[in-house]
Length: 297
Image (cartoon, rainbow, N blue to C red; front, side):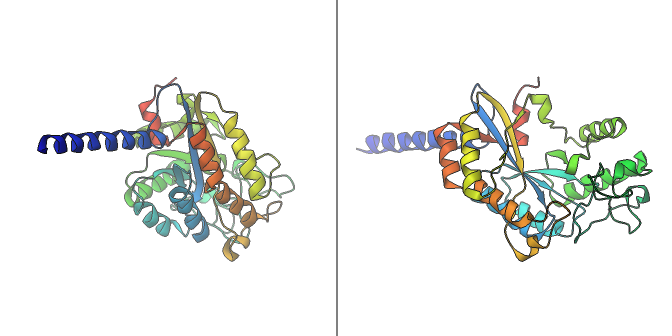
């Protein structure tokens, strides 16, 4: 009888281990001929609402990597929340622009060539249609040494507050708008061991929401996108948010429905229908850091 109990106990452990292995494969490993999907949530740190929505999109949803904006006012809270969720992959979302009208951020360093007359980052890298001169970094008399100093400061503060950061990403395309900047980016990513570039692993961009505006429309569109994926590795990027008074105060010319738009993103990321579709289609959710286990192309 004792031998039988021991055998049953061992068998139970084997079953538990096997189930646990499947769970890890579903979220957290990479390799093989299946369909792998990185779901990236951008701009944690930019507002309290973004922080809450980003963490919710991970804990209750499908997000696997979050990108933290270091110069923003809500960075300290974001760092604390990320450290409370140690299984979540984190990227340094290097920030050299400040796009919103009612809220602004400045460099961590003394970098006058990167700022407007008020000392804030320029709104964009490339000037938006209809915007006046003096609103785009690319048109300014920027200095590469100040860009390097600022990127280093953001990386080092992120590492100090969230030591497990695994990669870099660029806010509003700040990583690739100039050859000199692109070379600097590659060098710093390697120096800080944050050089996980999706393009090096043949990662393809997953389709977006198209013309879908409401949460139900976007859920359906996202599931259609998932159903169209073929074996390979894909990246989907968007910005979790919520329809709060804080986020309703955020916007710029041409994009004032930020709260409603980003609330719909969170609805998709936390949708039961979306999670069921991922399981039905045997899509494995992975993060940036999991790419390291894959072969570079």
